Length: 205
Image 1 (cartoon, rainbow, N blue to C red):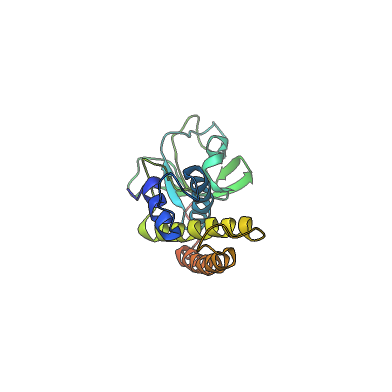
Image 2: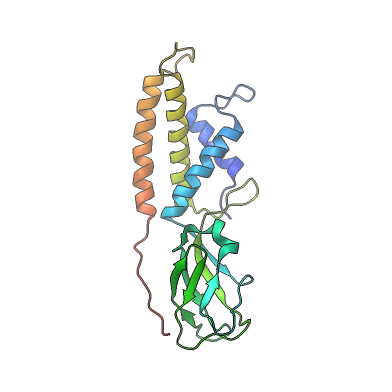
C-alpha cells in the first residue's frame, strides 16, 4: 500500500511551509481538493490497472457489454478498457480485445457469440485510490503528486494575494508565484516520465 492522503498532506505542508496547526494557510479540505485534481492527472499518466472479477456476465448471442456500472471509475471513458478474459478458467489465460460502441458499451472481439450469463473478467485503467486509509500510488506517482499539489496550491494563493497588500510576512505573492511556476515545471517533467509506452496487444478472436 502507498502513502495515505493525510501523510502526503503533511509532506505537502512541509514544502509549503504551512505547518502551524490552528493557523494553516490552506485548510485540509482545500488541500484535499487539490490532491483529488492532481491525482486524476497522475492517474491519466500512470493509471491503476483493475481486474474486475465480479461485475460482468454476457448476454446470449451478444458480443456487446454494458459498462455503465464502472463508468465513473474509468480514467478515459470506455477507451480505458484494455481487454477481457473470456472464457475464464483457462491456462494460459484467454484474452480478447474490445472495441468501443458508445460511452457505456464495449464489444468483445470474438468469433463465437457468447452464451447467456457467461463469466468474464474485465481489465481497465482507473483513477488511483487515495484516501486517509488507503492508497494505490507507487513512490514515483506520489512524488509527482506532491509536487503538483504544492505548485497548484501555491499558485492559487499567489493569485488571490497578487493585487492586495502583502500581509503575509515573507510570503511575497510574486515570489510565491514564480516558485510555483518552477515547481509546476518539475511536476510536468515527472508526469511525462510516468507515462508508459503503450503497445496494442492483439489477441486471437
